[in-house]
Length: 267
Ligand SMILES: NC(=O)c1ccc[n+]([C@@H]2O[C@H](COP(=O)([O-])OP(=O)(O)OC[C@H]3O[C@@H](n4cnc5c(N)ncnc54)[C@H](O)[C@@H]3O)[C@@H](O)[C@H]2O)c1
Picture (cartoon, rainbow, N blue to C red):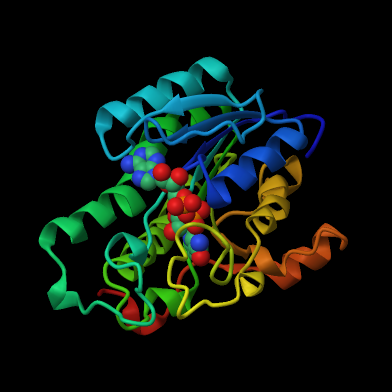
């Protein structure tokens, strides 16, 4: 990361998986890290310098609690909207024996949107004004691959992440020229976390994307070098830390969203 910016990085869903790996990577890179997860979820695996925030970010009070701590910690803020639930929260064998959309309850559908989509908005809504006042900031939304958004049996997960992708494109446009950016980050394949419970479909965990893959692009996005990067999506598994940033930008990033197609104008 750049010497000029020593950001405060807020990482949600930090108690395990990708969130925990990103906390460790950002502490190693010199950032102040606020690690957010549900009450009772943290174990002692995170670096002791991480400030732990136990909050349910599906609630407005939980998001406000995070925002208060973030404002107290500093003003160069990086918000990593990572917390989420996968299809395992509906069905542990979600890939080998998929659940069809009509088999879901309305509550399951709503709950998935509450954490995967609405919590991202609530935190961004609270912290964007702080970033705008400062003239610098990052909103990084963890989404998923386009294929996963459209897999059979992947309601509600796929639609929650498609909404995140679309929201990021719009946020990036709303923020353009402000010094604050919004980008998408994803592992780029099934990652080796507790979300991947379906051992029949994923028998060999060594083939899963390691959670540490997220760290390289996150470090880059948190730095001054990424000041002009807005509305992009980064596929972590294509980021090779041994290569120069310019090469990684070509390999690992593209415009977020589905493109501005002329026939879509007007709805
Ligand atoms: N694992 C994958 O294959 C994969 C692939 C693409 C994208 N993702 C995305 O990566 C992100 C991280 O997932 P992961 O794979 O590390 O899974 P994970 O289950 O290890 O991490 C998710 C974390 O979110 C936390 N969380 C859930 N509800 C919360 C709430 N209401 N308030 C605060 N925290 C809450 C959980 O406690 C958990 O620690 C998710 O957004 C997921 O959709 C994962």
